[in-house]
Image (tube, rainbow, N blue to C red; front, top):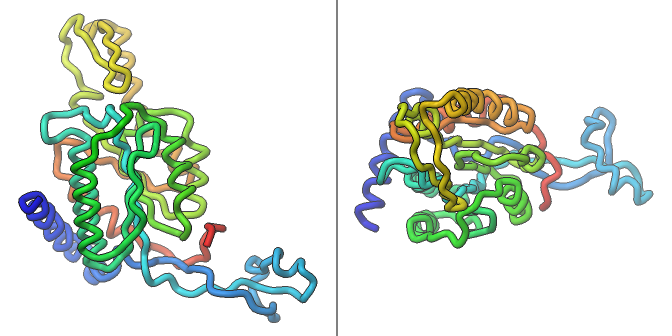
Length: 298
């Protein structure tokens, strides 16, 4: 554990230096609240924004009431990690899951340094781990230990279930970081639901060498890591190459999907340095003015 934490700390130091270089002063606020949170209701006054009227309270017949908000100071960060078997694709030590663990560990240390509350949801087609948000270095170390000790009970993926479960356990507005290869279908509705009440960032883990560029090897066995099923594929045939070509359009589809849902999409190329992506993630937060959040449960 000591060597692992030391390695993650080196990443974290490089990340902080890179963030400070690109956006001086950003190091003080990358994991601080950037929006507004509900404070109270009070009687409506002339000039108040009518969009902030609380119609449920007003309907009780005691007058018209409006919601008030205060600046959000303490950020809550939740890492939503896909631990299905498709995440095991890649070279030893640089598989998608390995990279996702390293990214999660680095973000945990950054969050601990800034006293942000940090939680973890690890899912396959079931909830594998739920660590409620907590802050400080002990919480960060616990998350790192949990991630590296985790042995998923299921190999399958079901992103819609993962997103629904995350929405179900979060009781306050959070920054949710989804780390997944996004190899699944029919999860746009749940993505939109989560992004409606939380700030959602999607880190798409992509192994381009194995998913988009494959040499002509003739007929080879291909094993589905989630089902264990083995099929024989002709990597030199037109059908296989058309499928590879179709995979090149996946990123455009994912970008459109996330844009429609209101989520931010960043691609993490497995096998290369992921720090530039994290710099983009952290420096890009907080751009724009604060606004009242959606109807997240209190």
